[in-house]
Length: 324
Image (cartoon, rainbow, N blue to C red; front, side):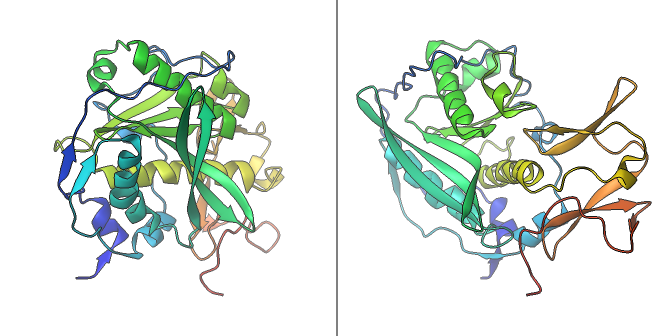
């Protein structure tokens, strides 16, 4: 049977899993005093809310990616006993399927790293945009064993172990200047998005945070793991696209005497502030549309390409070529 990525995003991993949890992993201690844990008054949303509130909507290039051919994982039985087992499961059952969407529109690769912290080697994975021999981190992931306590997150009272975990996630977010980070512990996928307006705000103790908890075992209420991870990866891509591949400055024709927009770092969006009112879309009907043949955004006005000098007015650079 032929599958597309979209088909498999909505399927929950169904290979049997044996778990042998005894003691949970301890969060890795950090010597970076400037990095603080996340407190519940910073966390804006949890598993019980609609994830779409904090993620940018899908665009036509998402349809292009999700139409790519894909294959489900091979049938097998899993045994989850270590953090390495959790990483292997997630990569085989979730991220390998999702990465089939990112083989050229644009190309996203997975890189694993191991480092020594205290006396225990720790590993993490970076999902990176690969463009002209440069790599831009989209999402950073940590692998732990049976450490996430979903009841504490939903109840709104984080214990010491959860606070240490959030501090560790913030360390990696700050290190890579990547506001989208996650931890998978074999039972739960914890997604955190630091709503930083600038890279240096990630380590700010007042930085607001979006949070989602997605269970490994489908409960019928949460997003499927693959779809949640795809949307999270797409959010990291939009940020990267807006931060690293935008033409500067915003053309005067689009500004139309408005103040220059601010760049929302964690999402890559432009935000206009006019007379004390904040707009996440242009206040006078200019819009951005994406050209799926090259992955670049361009400006439109009243649903037509804006051609002030006889050519399309581009907002971001091309990232692929489907017509070459």
